[in-house]
Image (cartoon, rainbow, N blue to C red; front, side):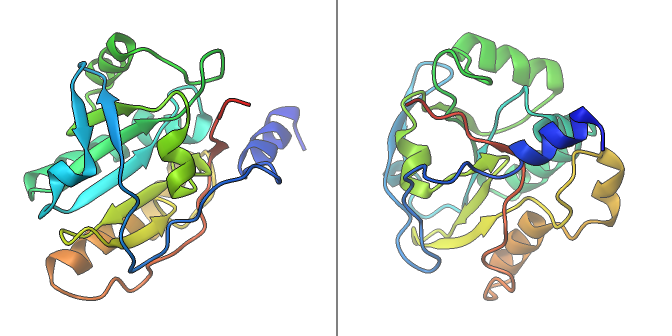
Length: 202
C-alpha cells in the first residue's frame, strides 16, 4: 500500500477522543449564527421555512478536491439552489490548520472553482462543527423547512478520493433532497461520512 493511500485512509475518519455533539435525525437542528465569507452574519433562524444543506469543506482535502475537481459538488449546489434550497458551506478549520482561510480567500476559491453555495460560513473556533458533530470534509447535513434534521452523513456511498467512483456511487444528498421535495420521509437519513478529519483547534 502506498504512503499516499495510507495517509488518505488515516485521514478518512475522525480521531477518537475528540468531543463532539451529535445532531439527531428528526429533532431540531442545532441553532447557530456565524459570519459569512462576505462579512455578513447569518443564522439558522433566518432560514426558517427553507430546506438547508450544510456542507463541511476544506479545499486542501483530497476528498473535497474529488468532488470539486470533477464538478460534482458544484452541480449539486446549482441544482439544489435552483429548487430554492439554501446551500451553506461551513469551514471549521482552525487558524494554522489545513483548510483554514479568511473570507476573501474562501470567495476566491469558490470563484475559481465555479462553486455556487448560497453562502460560506466561517467557523474557525469550530463551534458550529462541534454542535453538529461534523467529523469529515465533506460531511453533509440536510435540514427541513420546519428546522428539524432530515439527513446527516456522506455525500455519497463510495468512500474514496477517486473521482471515477462518483458515477457509480449512491448520491445520498441528492436522494435526501428528492425525498423532501416529494414530501416523503428520507429513505436513508443517516449514513457514514467520509473524508479528511475536520481540523478543529485544540
